[in-house]
Image (cartoon, rainbow, N blue to C red; front, side):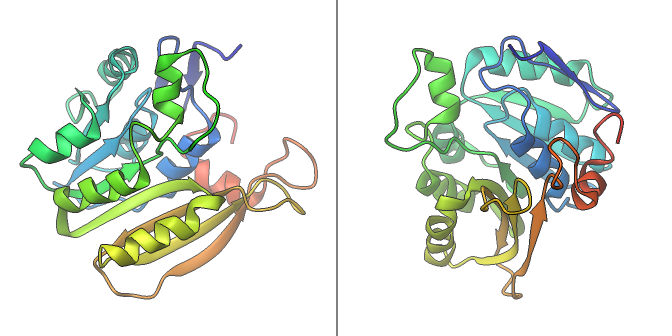
Length: 239
């Protein structure tokens, strides 16, 4: 059973009442994403425990982070974590579906970041909350791009982590919406393993994408690569 809490260097995540617990995907995205300059606005879509929103608050100055969460229990958990953090004045939780929020919101964002639900047409658990967090019935990749376009400033970035199998679909949607992929990192669990995740950023900037790989572990299990340790050093205790 997962711990009901997870300690980072500058904040603690309580996760007892959140459907999705702290995981490597969220930590990777929160550490890897490009951060906007001071006075910017960030939208974290499907914030869960509030992990990514707090990581971005730690990495930035004078940046406001709106954290969107559809599940009431997870939203309350995120709000608790925000209130107990050093950045409670800059991080706000909003309980809403992304579709409703994007159709009504008048604000425009410099960064839209999301670790989206990614299971499609697969068996579900008895937990409605966990299904919301894990299955894309509630937020498809198409809906995510469509809504993000309506919320972006002209200079904004969309930053995502996806299963490797969804890379091609994401690239098609980037092209469809006249965006460009600017960064792409393929995440490999360990040497000799296949790519499992893709970190990608897109925007209206036509610069050619910077592509690289990130291997999380070395040949020894639970012994992490120097590149991974360097990426998460600001956050993980004991790094």
